[in-house]
Length: 190
Image (cartoon, helix red, strand yellow):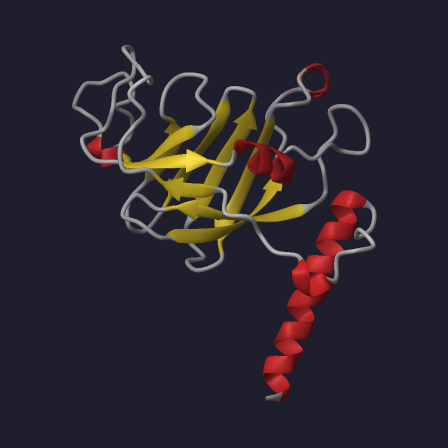
């Protein structure tokens, strides 16, 4: 019982610290126990009929998702202390697995662009991280006005999350790279 209480206290403290790092302080009407992670990815049975992706090469098997892009954007697009600087916050993101379910990754911003270029395009953020479940699972992810992308190197196989169509920030697909068609443009390091 004491251990359970201690764990709950630690989780509450970490959520409060995380929110304070992002917002400066908690809103007056929000108690620490009310802070929770939003559902960022939801399964979709069929793609909307109005989505057309004539140039997209689809894998033979994938999981179709609806993305809460505004919430994902708020979580991931954190600005550093100066233009082009990295944010020091660490985020935990539940990544949708191709076969269903999710895996939590602890991620931090990483420098990919030169500081001048990062200052010119502050809405492009790149992340690197590690799974909370499998220490050998690694993720590289980015978010921009064109959508969210991630590549995960996993012991179960490499998998990818891409926008369903070019510049579609509402739908995404999660798939194992091994399900890409042979000799496709996206046929890389199977």
